[in-house]
Image (cartoon, one colour):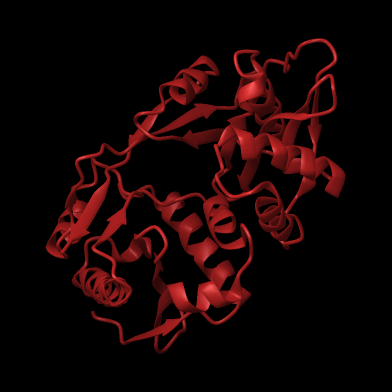
Length: 311
């Protein structure tokens, strides 16, 4: 039976919680469709928090009678990404197809009006024929660039301790001073072109947001007091899955085992928080990251497709 739907823009933080809950329910359903970890939601929407962007870029479908969240979508003009996730009970349904088409039409109109020439979507399993068919019906095709692997590993084992060179220390960023060192590591690790002060102001927004947890934001302090490597862990207490996003080592400190060390500490904290599994993803062309994750015991779980709609 088709549900009468209300389609509307993002309203407030309560919508973010409902979106998190839908992602958690999707993962629990384990029905063949990939749902991003709830930590991705916090990273996307609070790094930094921006209510104006959310109201412009985020829309939801809800059941007109019960108010139940049926699906949500996000369109980012700056990088042409379009994300859509439907409640797992609607997998493959005509209603899911109709919602996806409405969202794609909305994002396409927005993109065209700002001079955009495409939409891209990354978070879909290349083995999910049901979802791929629905996206294909909306004009999406496989991009020339490959998607990327998402890795998983069990935490039901004794974990190795982090090992760092003499004078280095694995820390968490509970204070603004420590968080600044963590930000210095990521600014270098990811080759951020934005000037340091502008990047730091963005980072501060995340640090001051309601989703920031110092004990989950890890970094390695070098022997001379600099930020050398960093990662964030995110926790899903329903599905018992922890996620790393992001992970990076400053170029001045690479080839020292620091990425492995900071992730080992992250794995230990996931386990202590009750997580049974750990996950991490990267691009198909990131050979260094893939080698690092496999060296830590991660195994291939999902290969994501990379879809594009051009005009």
